[in-house]
Image 1 (spheres, rainbow over the protein chains, first blue to last red):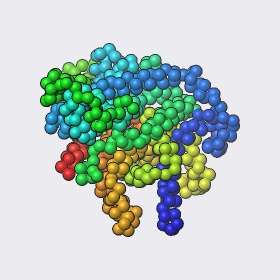
Image 2: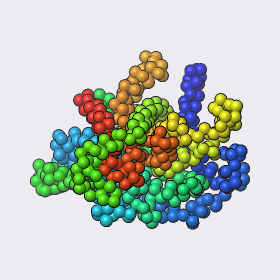
Image 3: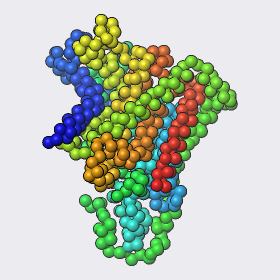
Image 4: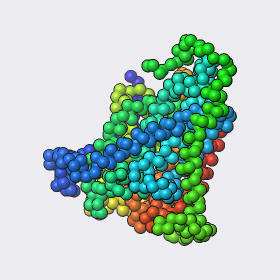
Length: 283
Length: 324
């Protein structure tokens, strides 16, 4: 093997290892912390990466039995699923309509949709707080289910609009010529072909609704309706007292399974964005 | 799979006895299109457009949490009031610094990561799970994780620095035993940037990777035949081909960071003093914690011109691409 190619292989793995370490290091630290005993954790002379005392499950037991973490977990999961469904019901038909049925301006509306996505929650949360209060939804999970699609619908419409546009028109026209209705073509031709885009939308809608902090912290103050994002920090940071092991356990328990699922869908997520390339680059 | 019909499968089906061009309601594109589009448009108008204009109305009113109705028009008084506060300039400065620093760091790391993930290697699937981990964690919980990682007393980074003799009495990084990352102005801002980059790198890599894998292989084969070195290929072929997508992906993630308060709210909380304050968190402090809804809305609106300018940049690039 030539020296340059050996050097290149080494460089490749070193770079990969460094970036991987950057991504994983905080999570590693969380997992180690989650299993540590107090007297081991709070001794600055101990090697923080080792278990100087035997690992313990008591922190995780504390998290599940002495705190409302199971409630937060259920709320987050429930909100996430409902938001995904609402998002798909609103965004998929809208994107198809813009891509195929509304003529020239529909096809070119992606910029406007993008602008809607860029209006930040920080700008909207004060008026939305008033609207949610007015509707009597404040302090319930429904307030969050009502507002999360403001983030997910523009994003998913934008993504799917590009995706539907990248499907060759001839495929649908062939079905139309065969006597299918437009609605039939949408359900039986366009939707299956847009599967990678829709998968990406599902993952994004779920991830965005799980990740939101500002709405969850402002709209909901009762423990029973809190999500993981807002509930865990409020419940496990009491004034100056941080329940570090339980906090880290909560983060790892939510984050790691999701990372595995999203990671296995990695190629699909990439394909979901594989839409908007300049024509000159299309092979 | 049953649903996975390709063109061939569709055409093989027996033609239904229907006239063409079609005539039923379900065939009229304009009607079907309007019906399909209407729910999303109504939703966005009700819960994005209306609140947006309410935010503008609030910012020129004297509404508070105790009395949230918009009674009086006070003109630009709220804007003038918040601009007079010393925290405003700091928050504006920090928002700009954090956003620009994130932009630069994220661009470099995204390019490197995409170059790495563009080729096959053993264990790639496992690597992808590790790489996506920061994005899979809810932002608030990830921020708490970093809070502990950068703890003033028990940070493992400090421990490593102490073990190798860089930190502690009589060493290069000072007499103290800890660096107090979140308790100092520039270290705090640096930490916020690193956390933001860490959190958004997976997303920007996924978007750019979509563009990278779509570059035709012939371009690289041709360059290899011509004897071009790795960096020549990177700067002459890969980056120009990615140019637009890279810009869109990075702006896309960075603008979200510019409007987000989660990381600051859970790590430095804007402190010490207001030295690491950013506009979104200050809007929250003023509007909700401080009860001055109108002033909070005014602060939040300061974000908008910047977002709009950056968005127009995206818009223009996207249009140029359409013409390409």
